[in-house]
Image (cartoon, rainbow, N blue to C red; front, side, top):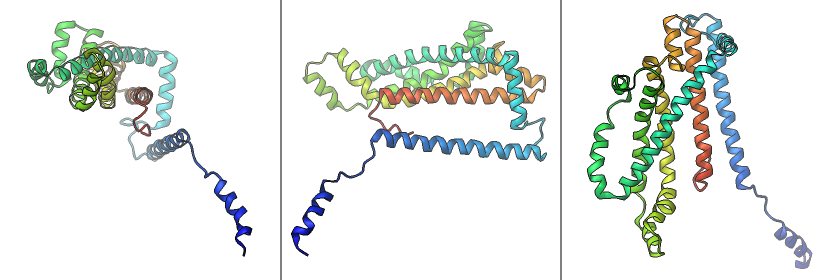
Length: 281
């Protein structure tokens, strides 16, 4: 075969661009697969749970089946009690969490940046950090009485330390070359903190924020079990006394769903603010 006879075919193959998939499409497909797997896992658990309940292998008094819980959710939504308790709990979590984020981020950045100051204050923080948030409940009731204030305080205490630890560690572990480069270019200390330290620390700060949000939900339920007259924790405690197990489990499931949704929202914000991180999680 003559070389001239294969040259046009070779050139056409060389000019054909290779098939490629855009990064955004690949990430979307991966997220869709992850969501599909999660949905299948939930469905398998629900089906097995309902089959065991229908067969009588699970005591309906101790753990109602999914169909019974769907009826319970419908009743609670119709009478409006579930929505009122959800609103009360979300308000307490958000107020306490936002206060903890404000204090924890500020304290973490300041102590991480000013090392001499951290030598005075960090030992105090480390001495308070091991105290469980639930241990503060008697003090919170003595200081603030019964109502929203003790819940705000307990959520604040519980969420403060994960935020502080992640922020402090992130600022302390910033590579010095980044700071020196900014200073050589004429950056002021304020510019270094706002434009170098904080953006570089976000990949470590956000996991601390998500952990703190989960701890905040645990704290608010504990507070509502003891020092509140509304909220999902109060709903669980009241129905436990009345032996209304479906309402108890419905309250627990509601907490899990709200916590899952808030964590997903935090992950979305993280992907928007830290786009250079791996977003397939």
